[in-house]
Image 1 (spheres, helix red, strand yellow):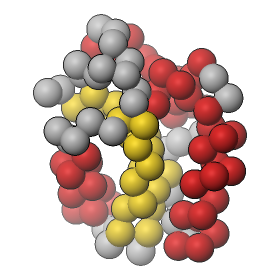
Image 2 (tube, rainbow, N blue to C red; image 1 turned 90 degrees about the vertical axis):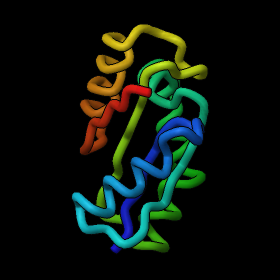
Image 3 (tube, helix red, strand yellow; image 1 turned 180 degrees about the horizontal axis):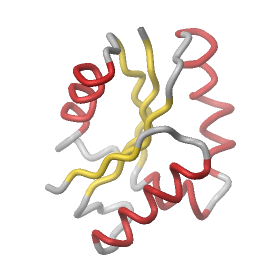
Image 4 (tube, rainbow, N blue to C red; image 1 turned 60 degrees about the vertical axis):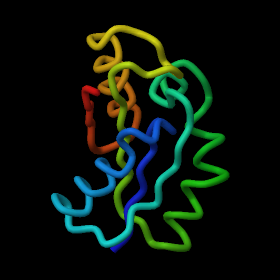
Length: 106
């Protein structure tokens, strides 16, 4: 019923990601954790631990979220890098622990 999404705070695509996950993975609710350019933080900082302790565990323990998604996008102000590098960061984030990689071009 619940899943967790960690993605950029950019309002241009959050609704698209939520809709995509609900429609393609049959979740009714998507707990959405936003930050500016989180894929950059996931691979370069101890970001996962701080987010997990504060927010992800609430989603998992209270809402019984059974999947965690990570998403990024082109033209990201919080992670201002080229598309190829952004996609590579998403893949690296996936390898750390998450289950879906998604890149949207704006």
